[in-house]
Image (spheres, rainbow, N blue to C red):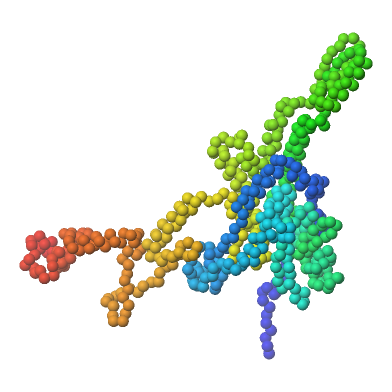
Length: 548
């Protein structure tokens, strides 16, 4: 009789999960609309941001500093163990985890296809990869929503399953028309399904097939609504990311936060523009009290004719008085630019906008606030921190998504820091590495250098100790007397020369016996300094007393 196998502990337990918190910004399952509490559409936000000189200057300077040095490829690891898979960041000759010497270097063949794509135009619009990145950075600084779209070419088998894909083009998705397709918890890929061929057909049934071609359906993650059509995108084709206010769905536009400041600056610039053009109101009216209104009217007609040709002409108005006494009164309609503190107000608004983006005055060609080299260095430091924060979004979030879709596992795509590293600092760092390598070698380790100019260290194999003279057929090992000391190889010749000189002229009290005890059980040549063939009859009185 076969005994029944008892179920394991996990088979006898039931699973329960923590409920996922609902989000009030998620309106309904499916296409998630953006927050319209401000009743301002996306095109208006872009128009205001590009119309403001200060806002566009901040966005442009920040974008230029972020991508000033382009992008680079770096090794994800120096060596990877072929047995346990441990990735080593520093050069090594054996795995520190399992001790295996089966180490693999990063595979350069993984970069062939992506180099072929990114080194030229990345789409049919003849855009370079760096141009697409700059477009996405503008979207982050204006809408705080950016969409990276990768156009893929799929290879499907007879069962309709995707076997592999190739990325053919890279585009920027418009934040105005792109939308997230999510469920009531904000998770994507659970509410709608579409076919790879007919992207405008979305169904709620995951087990169904396409009504037009009968192909398998795939979960929808994003939808693009443009020109009266809907384009569905599946997983791995679009990446949405935010910079200032990341959330489950959309970010918060910085322009909306600075809306009053930006629109005030635009109004101030329009006011100054209208002050020097014809389409403006008069500075004031000159009111004259008089009893002869007819002559005043005829004079007023002439004034209007002159105002049509000269917008700066001051009009004069006559007003009758009951007492018969005339008077002249000036009624001012507006203050001058100086009286309204135009310059101070504009600088304050500009400082608030630039402080939000982290762009200092020195990057906007304003040297009025510089108070020496210290102040200038602090302004550069503030902007560099803003640039570093922006590059972190690309290095830690966007580029890993791209390399994963390209199938790259051994290399990392990064934006180098905007400030180049000092060459003198590099040489000093290399000098310190050489000094450390010499010290490690003096401790008995074997030091070598790889093809990248990095030092590698290996602990030498233990050598057997010699108990006596080597027998016939046995290998004679020489032990380095200076191993484990801080004596460098350059000093070895001087030490050998000193030893040769010391052997030719023996010292009366050599260092080896200077601190030895003088008491012994019998006469010893190490203590007396006598030759081997000397007898007791040649021992002088002083030596006899010391021995005896």
